[in-house]
Image (cartoon, rainbow over all chains, first blue to last red; front, side, top):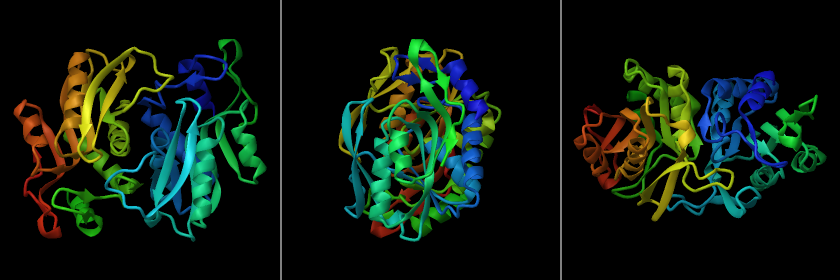
Length: 195
Length: 195
């Protein structure tokens, strides 16, 4: 997606060979015009998939999910990273390790918001080691819901998450797929969408 | 806002005299059509205020903020509840106590995303004790930015947060202002918007 790649080139900060900081438009400050374009792109790619819910994980997946869900006319459900006291125990849970933050979180989704007849598009901001998506897939299996695919804003294609998920036969659409962050420079794979 | 009040009556769950659970459309599952209506309502109320940024706090303030910001044509900035390893120390910080979760969090915003010439609309999902908004106001003061007002989806008008903030001369717009949750029933104040 050219608009997104241009934004990454213009505003992304390469902090190391593994870390790309996009705090100016995705992870801290958020560009709503770009998020709308991203959400609508996901909705267009999955327009014939019969999506009934968009599933994401707090926090940065919520913005693009909102616009995709608005286009589909379906709700967003976001997985929570820790139990809130106002949530009951009626939960699907899984564990997600964040290599960026160095912590393992329980993620949870209320059983009220996932049904066995749901057809779900997962959306997240980054795909690197794939831990967050694997946790969401685990929860979708627990709920016997169907996974239509995974929409990712920025995939770090040089890490293993994308391969692990695609090898399970799951469709992954990355709007920007990064080949390398070497030498302080962002290099993209030519083809950023795949089954 | 009638659409919102109707939704609260239909789907809100009164767990106690202090706790209203709206997990089916705001805090866990999110209704994008309602969020768009809410965001546009805030944008309309502040359309002449010269807003340059919408400020919120993760997680549930992000969805309505996106649609307000899209209408204004300005970015959203969300305060983070804990430092991420990919954030530098170039931060404004404040402390926020959550009575719901029983924890005190540091909240932080990168100095890169608040300027002294910013005119800011704060948006959040709930206003109860006002701790989150007071933390955001503290950060706006540190940045010497101007606060145009505070847009709240659901105010618990029987708690003290709204009074504390209004007494500081700050405009607060609540789209639903709850008078009481007694006897398992939601009762609204007649007038839910105020200066």
